[in-house]
Structures are given as C-alpha cells and as structure tokens.
Image (cartoon, rainbow, N blue to C red; front, side, top):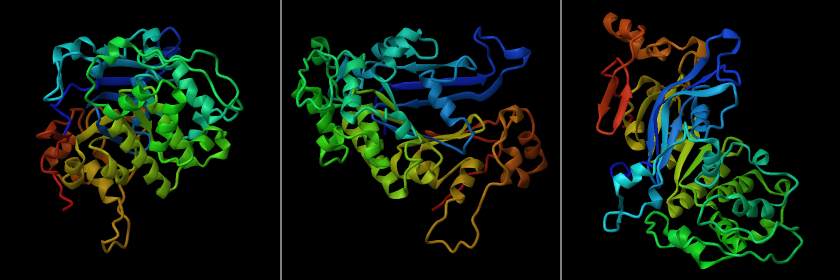
Length: 413
C-alpha cells in the first residue's frame, strides 16, 4: 500500500542496543555490555500505521526509544546500525500526478538519528517525531491546565511552520491571549500532498487556541473549552490519552511513536482512542509506529506489522498476510493463543516457557527451545535450529520471516 509509492520517512537498519556502559562509553567494571536488540531493521512510510508486536521483554520499547535516543544514559547505547529519518514532506520536487518525492532529494534530506548531534536531535524530538506513552497521567503535568500544556507545544516546537507565541503563557483565568502568527513563506509555497486537512486547519487561523479547539473536536471532544480549562485529574484516562494524541499531532510531526498507548485503558476506551489516533493520523498524513503486545489491536488498525522476539525481528509483512498466513512458528503461537468466540475451545493454547533474559540469548534461533515445529522437525533441521547459525530468510513478496523450518506456513482461513 505504501511501499514503492514514496521514500520511507524512517528507515531503521541493523540497529543493535546494549546496556552496561559508563559515562565515558566504556563497559562498566570490565564486564561485557549486555546486548538486548540484535540487528533490528524496518521501514515506515508516510501515512502508514506500522505495528511492532511481541511479548513483554522482547525489546519493543527499547527499539522505539532508541529512535530518539531516549534510552537511559549512560548505561544504554546504540552499538551498531543506522536510523535514517527523511524529510519527505519538505521536498520541493514532488510529482503531483503521482504523489512521489524525488528520491535523490529525499536521500539528501536524510539524517542518521543514531549519530545526529544532540542539539540537532532536540529539534527533532517532539516537533518532527512525537511520542505517546502508556500512562497519560505521568505524561501530563498534574498542576497545569490542559490549555497551558497544549499551548506549550507551540512555544517549544522547533518546526519552522509553527507559530511563535508573542508573550509568555499567562494564567488560565484570562479570557484572551494575544498570539502572533509567524508562518514561514518558503514552507507555505511547497506542495504537501500527505497532509491537506492539517494544513488547511493551520492556514485558516493564526491563533493556536483556534487550532487546538479544532483538533480537540477531531479527537471527539464536544466541549473543547471545558477540557482546556480542566486539570489532568479532572479527566478520565481515555480523555487524557486523546489529549496526548492531540498534543503529539499539533506540531505536525512526520512520525508518532505510540508505546502501548492503551495499556491502562479498558477495552471499549482502547478502541475509541486507537480509532481517534488512526483517523487523525490519516487526515494529517502522519506515520505511526505502534508498540503493542495485542495482536487483536494490530489486526484492526495496522497496515503492516513486524513481530519481534528476544531482540530480533522474526517476521514482517502486511497485516492481512501475517495474520491469515503466518510464516514463523512464534507468530503462529501468538495467533493461536487468541481465543475465538466461534471456536469450540475448551482449553487456551499457550506458548511454553518465556522470553529468555538477554544474557541467555542464543546466537542462532532464539525461539528454538520453545518451538513446537523444531521439536517435530527432522534431526538435521533440529540441529540447525539449536546451532549458532542465523536462521535464513523465508520471503514471499513483501512478507518474510527468519526460520530454518521452510514448511512452517500456516493458514487461519
């Protein structure tokens, strides 16, 4: 759907993250640093909803946080690989009839976030790549109104097309605020094929509060002013998470990293929040990286999915392909563990064992000791599964997995 239409907005290539470094970048106490992710690679395209799924402890959040280098310092470090972030929306050479960016210009605009100087990376954080975290109550300041916190997005955003506040933020009891518009003329002349709705909203008003109210309405709030004048503790969990979605989208980022944004919410509110996130992201052309362990959520909202296990990507492809015809035994196990109301299921299916600790990661296939396919395979295949050899790539068009058991294809009908 997205692959081949344009350049990837984010390209993660062979990224490995390790823990156990001191402030000088050396190993602590002479111990070997512990590598928790191993050569992780995936691409995310403009407007795409991309899911990274796996059990707790498989390295999903570490991978997501490494994109903006939000890993705990100095302990964690990206030891190899690149994270190329492309300004595909800022390119001038756009074929309007096809909606394709000139690949040479997109390549020139690419920045490696893994090595980008911290001062430049600060301009990317929040403005070009935004985050939505698990706990909205921890993401929002409990003693500041929603209005002030949303206005701060415009104050601190480094995006050239954002407004700059002409005064310091004042108390919520004030009935009006004088805000001046400072839109970049160069940016306004460029073509932006992916975000017509967002640009139209932003261009129609020079007042950030007008834009904020409109975004809150798009997020499903019927009374934006009441929300703006509220403190976080006065809103429900679902309402707070929708406020966080609005906050992430206000600076018009090219990518949103949503790290299990519905974990603390009940099922019905989960559906509402994810529907709002997907709808608003599609209207603004923003790509979304969704971190989750819930395959049900993935099947409903994602365009493509990468399945992660023990620090490695084991399968990737379009959601329909991965769910209906999973290639890797781990993916098959995850899907088999989901109860189905129409099936005559007396006992729940589960994957034996648990994700190993990083210090116990195998050099070869890391799922072999839990894999039923490996246990049933021939002695030759089982020997390969348990060896230090890396599993080969099984590819079917844009759907692929890494496994020694070549005949693992499964159908869920």
